[in-house]
Amino acid sequence: IALAFTDPVARLIAGELSDGLDETGYVRADLAEIAARLGIDSLAVGKVLAVCQTFEPAGLFARDLAECLSLQLAVRDRLDPAMKALVANLELLARRDFQTLKRVCGVDEEDLLDMLAEIRALDPRPGMAFSGGASDAIVADVEVRAA
Figure 1 (cartoon, rainbow, N blue to C red):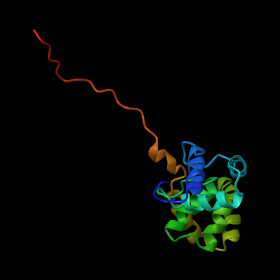
Figure 2 (figure 1 turned 30 degrees about the horizontal axis):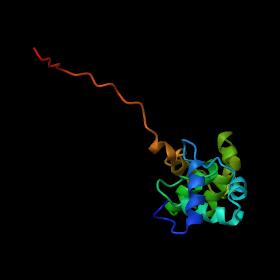
Figure 3 (figure 1 turned 90 degrees about the vertical axis):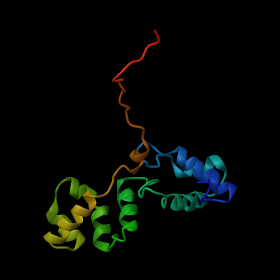
């Protein structure tokens, strides 16, 4: 954050957004509340959020799954109109309504299968890369004692 923002207000906003991240990397804080608490315009919060959303790993600072996937697809230069339609209709994917998805996305079955493979390759929880996993206990092979 310190490297991305030179303006102290932008750093403050970025810090608030960072504090509002959950373990998956999504912003759970309400942007309007942040703006009100800091006494600034919501547009400024949105601009800082847009910069934070360019941080690695792609998908951090998303507000929901669709935005997380869209950020990752944009980095891969794969956010074309068909993919945007797919991401906007994740509920159809959850229901496995592939016929409607093909129609909404304007693609055939082969293209839809390729798009679904791309979606599966994305990380829906980019913040988990920073979570400290459980440490394994280390058991000594040899123990040395003073006589």
